[in-house]
Image 1 (cartoon, one colour):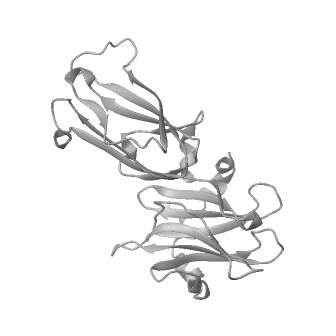
Image 2 (cartoon, rainbow, N blue to C red):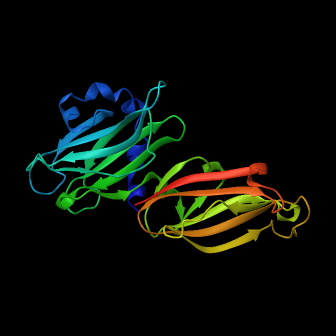
Image 3 (spheres, rainbow, N blue to C red):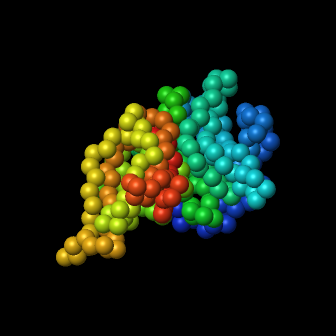
Length: 256
């Protein structure tokens, strides 16, 4: 996968990703909405027509603590400045970011890689291409967590927003004690964007389930059709209400 060839960029000194506002000029801000802020910019032919294009990394101010949210890339066509192409990632945020231009796919057309430094999740990298004047995501940071074709989610992912491709299998693993009556129950299920392929209860090897003995509830899902969905579950017994849940799990999935 493309991201595996990019660790050299991921491990650039953190100082390369700090204070990048000093690297950008005011010219690119004319292409942004009033609530959008320029983070970094570059100039290169990324559409493949031989003309230099303007490349902007931008986001929205993230509260009083600083940083940016809704970070994406915008390309202004050098041959036709009225034409603008944007990526459509969701939930990408961080304190700073940096653009890198290189040919990731080997097709002799430059692609756009951008890295975002987030104090909560570390450095995240995303790749995109604008060949033939169309924005397309090549890879997302979450793809490094795809194992054997499945994106593994656990309780540690609770509250996150993730970007995945349509057709990606998602394996959701949550701790559960079914013999006590507490089981994971869905709060709605978007069948237009998710398909439930399988679900099973796993217990440690040679350890039969018993009262108080934890196991692992595993849902195998298929992400389908671009769009935004929420995976929302609560852990409570059938004779209680969701308000009495012992635990909750919720992530937002942006399918591209």
